[in-house]
Length: 358
Image (tube, rainbow, N blue to C red):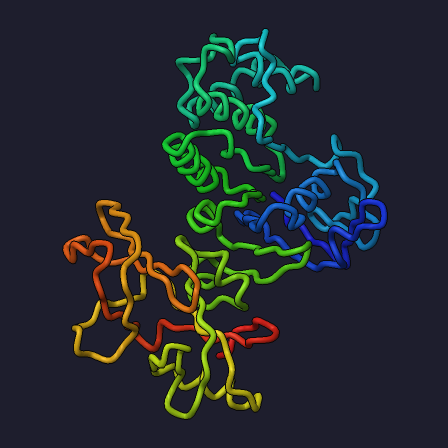
């Protein structure tokens, strides 16, 4: 088991600064997820931990030992890649055992570790098969098993689910979460999929342009995003944003609709001496009101029934917005609907810096 600590860590490729100086601590036995859009630096950070990328500035500690110049093989880390990287001519058993054989691990210990990992990953029936005889999900389980048998201090996952279809992705995601709860080993997982981050992590690290935007438990990041970027990235469908003007009574949209806001958010805005802000409302927090109630009058553009709920798209201020409503409403394109939201579910952001006002 091991903690990971980065102090002033920075990385450039040529003249391009990919990771500005960064401080981050990953606790022992923690499942942490790096999440962000393509190019945000999450995979580079993972490769730095693994020793596959050099450090230009700062320090990296694993289990309180500085490892800047320690070779990857000496860091006691196991990595699971996006592609399975299995030896096609070897059986599943031999793929999982190969690394241990190269370390001259006794045969009895190899068999014990392989059988244990296969049992945890439910791949015992496939131990004598070749990779070509396995599904994508089974191959990814084998890749995970190959990492598990090493009993490493740290597991690193580099977008391991991106090659799987939706059903398999959900299944393997559950397997990895269950695995983390059984092994209680430090795990660092990289993904651009915020659903994976929300469902798997003890804590999420949201990255943008190599800089940490927010660190926190999934529920914390969802409910209290630090800025407009985090608010728009975490949550599916994405948060709706409106430019608004504020006064002592609340906020006013461009079309004249008015809404009350949490007192703390309004106080933070008015303390700054401005009145312009950005209002954020998550799709699931919209409420369909009676037609005669004050709220946002919308004309439905597109309806996407999902079974358990329905996504209703509408245009406002020249932008496409979305609300998640109950399927019993049976809304259809062209309907005029009045929407509102509970004041305590709304978010206000600084119109210039994007930081949350609360």
